Length: 75
Image (cartoon, rainbow, N blue to C red; front, side):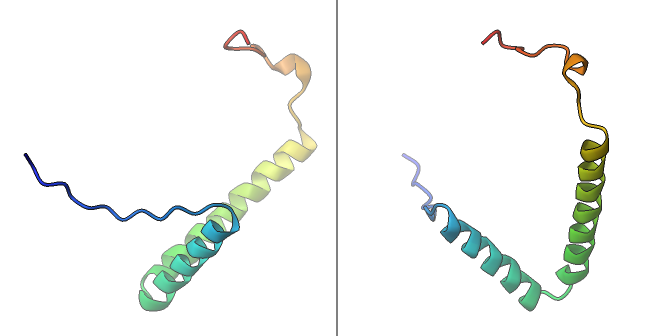
């Protein structure tokens, strides 16, 4: 009989989870300055890719005939 390892679980939904995530990111950026550059580069790259995808979908949307298999599971 192996002893069980206790695990901490936080059950939260919606806005509470978002606030917890923002607080955790802020705490990491405050207490670990080395991660600030990584975070800034990651956010910058994310914004660039989001802008590229937004503009591509805005000016060249997917048309109905371009979709091959509309019901892949047969539902």
